[in-house]
Image (cartoon, rainbow, N blue to C red; front, side, top):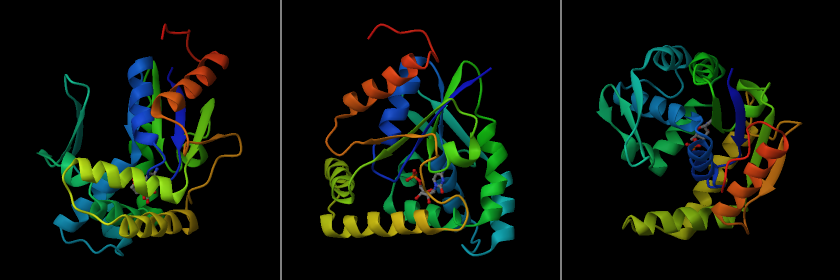
Length: 229
Ligand code: C5P
């Protein structure tokens, strides 16, 4: 039996870092569901499938050849048709493609089973937008992470500067705002906290503080035995 913990929220709220850290700490599997939508966006672009062709997109979603490999240093390598696309997957352009393909109900249905297959013992940290509301509604612990648009854009800005990319903070704020708008206002699986989710605003918190808070909830709920810090 797999213990499932869902971590949902908008981009830049810290879900990825916190989820990977928790999975590592608890020895759980990790589902980066955003990566599936990003892979589909990239696959569609490569195979010249229109972003509004629901049938072709859902076929691609069900059958695309993808792979996730954890390297010895703990980092995750993501493959599309055997090619390492980990870097290309993280760009703003791929994020925008992902949020467009993600708005199709047929695509979400096609990816549903693929996401459920990640639930394996001893447990899974599922990171995304609708993990607690749609994909794993039975999860005993659901977290919803948020942060202000300014803070999320600032985090992304720092990340890109560190990578040596020259970007404008203003433009990033605009991108964050328009992706939020698309994710929150779509008809299917819009971004919103599950009724039983615990909301955490991470604007003023460090990654370690967020991880500690979630770990305490995991222990309080008795989901795993307390692990020495
Ligand atoms: O989390 P990440 O930024 O990688 O997600 C990229 C896009 O994929 C999101 O903006 C959203 O549109 C879509 N997505 C989704 N449902 C999920 C995860 C991601 O719709 N569970």
